[in-house]
Image 1 (cartoon, rainbow, N blue to C red):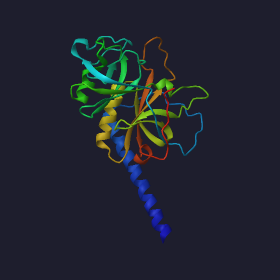
Image 2: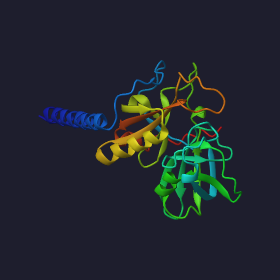
Image 3: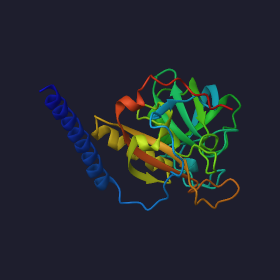
Image 4: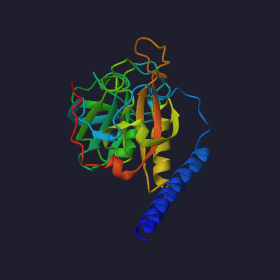
Length: 257
């Protein structure tokens, strides 16, 4: 009798999980058309016990921030991309282009993720220059912000020794981690950071039983040179069980070196 009840519970859990995934995929079809993009390398085999690990940032800073908008809209940034004042980007003096930064406004407590695609600010008292859209998401006066920078190249690579199944990832509440791609169901992908953030937010607002996670992978087909980051990264949107993202069983991993 106990085995029967146990089996029924497991079947019910499996059916619920499948139902959630199907609902996510239905939302995906309404939001975006299908993409034909490269997928991360899966040639290596990893322990089935690995799912996620919290990570330390490569770069920390705090101070005053600023923002720029309409006067620079559609102008070329230092990396060659066109500036989108409504996007989720920022200018920094030394972080590599393509770095992802989690910014926390210490007055409001709000957070936002941005991609570094420009150089600045040119006022020495400011540490970061946000796009107008990112600044609006933070609110407040930007008088005191903290910056945690993550550099994909220090985590993801495509050689024999790389842990290419373990990608830099961010949960929908901005928690950074290394996430095994086998631990989540991939929903969509794109090569534009702002579009990826928008998709993550839309799906997160519609799906409550799963963590909608942003994963960052180097694009193995990238052929650009110099400062260009256009198509250099693939941003995946994955659905992950909350207990995987919020697991406290694995200690923090420092990837600052």
